[in-house]
Image 1 (cartoon, rainbow, N blue to C red):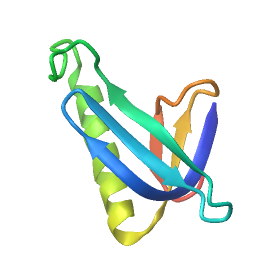
Image 2 (spheres, rainbow, N blue to C red; image 1 turned 90 degrees about the vertical axis):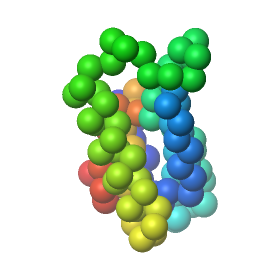
Image 3 (tube, rainbow, N blue to C red; image 1 turned 135 degrees about the vertical axis):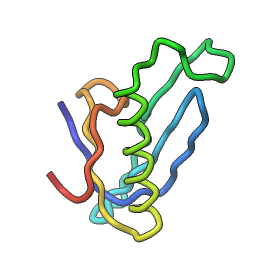
Image 4 (tube, one colour; image 1 turned 180 degrees about the vertical axis):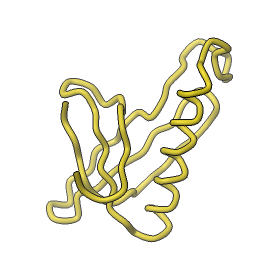
Length: 93
């Protein structure tokens, strides 16, 4: 697993996808991450998506919005070879 800590520079949300861009303030490097992506759903959320996952996504969005509004650091965890997020946390790990 890999992680990146920094400030939220962008948060784009729709029913079928959500992305965020995190910038490391020390280096100025930024990376865009996939919070969720449901291609081929006609712009909607798949019916088989369980309530746990929906609640988790909602919590990520709330945390990222607060961090964006208040210029707070967040840590995004993702697989080493993927931009697909597995966890979002306020502050550093």
